[in-house]
Length: 525
Length: 48
Image (tube, rainbow over the protein chains, first blue to last red):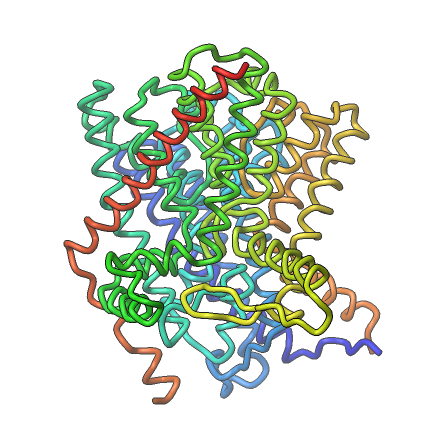
């Protein structure tokens, strides 16, 4: 029997959601300041409106949560698992809705759905875009689009967790598909994630700005603007760019190289960043290495032997070979420098889930056969767990592969022989049936999502290859396009891709719980 | 240690040299991958 949610459930959800929206209202001050400094008055007005709506909705929700007994503070309300999941799913639906207001008012979008599509694409760090005449979009609006990448990549919830605490906040953390508890509390972990991001912001912005100024000849202000926009999109594996030709606009191998470093950094888990950065963790790593037979003189062995790192290096190698051999067979690139530069950047962009392109979508559409297979698989697999990347994730790929290998080993060995069912991920872990099952379920859901999206594309007359490519790109939060995504595509296809972005980004569970919550409300007793 | 005490623990004190090292390691990884990519590209073009 389904139990209808009680008024207290709604109050608890409203309290958490309201406070998160107030945090986002605070984040909206940044584009407002940008517009003010740039004397972009029309965008400034739309940012004020957006921040006002965020603040009003936030205040109303928090106020509602305090009724009817004002003696119960929001902090004392317990956020259980289902509440947390519902809050996360609602946050990721409401923020793009309100966040699309300045985009819609800019006049660069044909309708509210297109503006909401871009806001959802920005927040989920996908990078598919329906904006028109991007090259003439106001800089503050471009800043807001890229800031959405940063908010989504770091996790709105992570931002909110730094500012408020309460019982049950762990469920919010898990709801965004994060399971990497680096420090004793969720709050200190959230702070560590922001510290890693701010470190990369400092290095990335300085390096990109210097390259843009010195190598591309941009003015100082323009160098900072492009450096900041590309940093947001690269480190958060988003894929928006301030120019319609994406990274191809810069025509610079050096600029692409620095961007590639940030893309790789974005696809690494925050836990791995933390281990690389944190001196104490490095000492512990050395200790683990000494226990494993002294193979860890350089402290790198525990990282290189971890299942997740091995998994992502293996899949990156395989998909790169597939793509390069496919491209060589097609004869699109005839020199080593041309093939390695274009092929490497595109496969890196696909596997990290960034979505930057250095070739036009019309040219990417010509990448058929093995090259298409390599790119599609790379996009689907994605980066590491608890990173800003989307897709199935390297940890799950490693676990599923390991489970299959263990089964095959078990069949080959004599009856009664024991198979070592442990794997190394900064310590030995048992590969239990439950762990394997969980990884397989999410992997299968991703495959189903990709096929469903491709099916909708096929129904609207899109050929199989581009339909599958675009669906995988949306579902795995990548953003590479072969030309299907455009303002003229059918409304149903736009909604399908938006749903894919949301489901893929939140890794299904939070959205499923929200649907179950609504169903219980309607049909429960 | 109570949950409240844990909540207010400092994250950690990052060291500037470690910070530069982190970025350098990531840059080195991309350089190595790019060199491998050039090798694969050469083999692919030779085969086809």
